[in-house]
Length: 392
Ligand SMILES: Nc1ncnc2c1ncn2[C@@H]1O[C@H](COP(=O)(O)OP(=O)(O)OP(=O)(O)O)[C@@H](O)[C@H]1O
Ligand SMILES: [Mg+2]
Image (cartoon, rainbow, N blue to C red; front, side):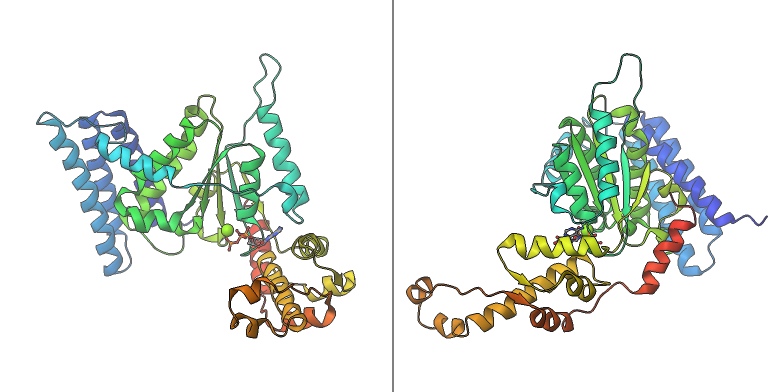
């Protein structure tokens, strides 16, 4: 069997970086310096296997950066080292990262009832959490869920579901875009990750939502920047360590992606469960229209059959947009003088009573012409094939 040396060497390099990070976090500076140096040598080996000069140069830059980290540890050994925290940064720096982590807390009132479809998924997730929160009989170790990966086409409820899980657990919801972590914190992103998980643990019950997780993809993009790699390694370290470190605190990591095939096995294997969030089926689409129209006070004079037929192939986000377009058109027809009223001043507008008429098939058909479904049948086939190729 052919062995992909480059892939193998990358795994070895990732392990070496991870080891160095763990040693550095333990505060053992001499051992950390040696571990970073060791990782730098693996990065050189990895560079030697690059197929292009540009790739070789990028990988060498990683090796240089790892050597710098070794030097930094050595320098801290000599003079009286400034007081540092477990993350290898000053107390002041650690405070800044903590504050930044607190800014990632999002409040949202999304409940499971606000989600159309996905019944099996929500029931399974709810049952898993009920199990992990309920009292276990003495001496029985109930498995806890620590990490989930949601994947599927855009706009079908991944973010919504993560927020609902968080609310259902009465947890603090940290919402993080992985691409932001990289662009805002770049080389410092591992410190930010550590601060984020420390803050989550300190709050007890927390959900860390890592959106656009494929920004970390290394399997196809060929991205081998040191910042990407170190962020990836710190996230994997946190995912591996969750079970041991949370000491009673329930910290759940939920990652979401539209491109699961870009994630390599080392990443995928860290998740206890991967969950497909597909385009909404007929029943889910009917429920979405109910949520966006009927439950917002509009009367709908369209048969269920037409509603379902016209929304076939649309995502939840597209259906939400469709409903807004329908309402807009109906409003314009029912209140033709609204724009003119705006010119007459605030008092005239405030004294006007808005007319609301039923939404009809004509509104639906007109709105539908303005929406192009983003998810093609080919894309759905890609998800299906990826799921069948044994991801979960
Ligand atoms: N299952 C659903 N039930 C109700 N509304 C939905 C559902 N899915 C999507 N929507 C609507 O679409 C919007 C976008 O959904 P959401 O942000 O959860 O999608 P996503 O899967 O995270 O998309 P992306 O991959 O682009 O991040 C929601 O705010 C909601 O209005
Ligand atoms: Mg999302």
